[in-house]
Image (cartoon, rainbow, N blue to C red):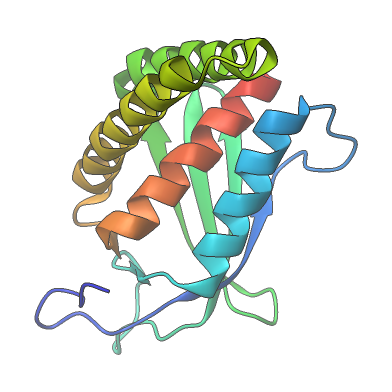
Length: 168
């Protein structure tokens, strides 16, 4: 796992809560992506809020409430006791093309699985990996100076954003 930049405290997420998570009617493949991203994210991550107004750097673990509101991705960062530390909002515009491509690839993957087309599934999986890498790079770029995250954390957050956008 990558280390935070020099001068940045180490931190991690202990829990991730998706806004509107109750009563989800996601297709099984997308629900599996959501569950796996959350499990992987809480198991191993690097997450340090940099916008906390405090004399000392914020130390984790943190609880992240992730939501889509008014065309923005909202990171509501809290302590384990529920006390809010910071709220960071990102415009979704820069992510829209990637989210659209992600949903097209998921649909293609489901269809290829149903048809039993192994070579097609492999090609789609390679495309998904590339798309996740691009989404992770954009996530890190957009969060620079607000939240320090490593590449693996950014990939998982990108997956969650795509899944959440599917619900809208």
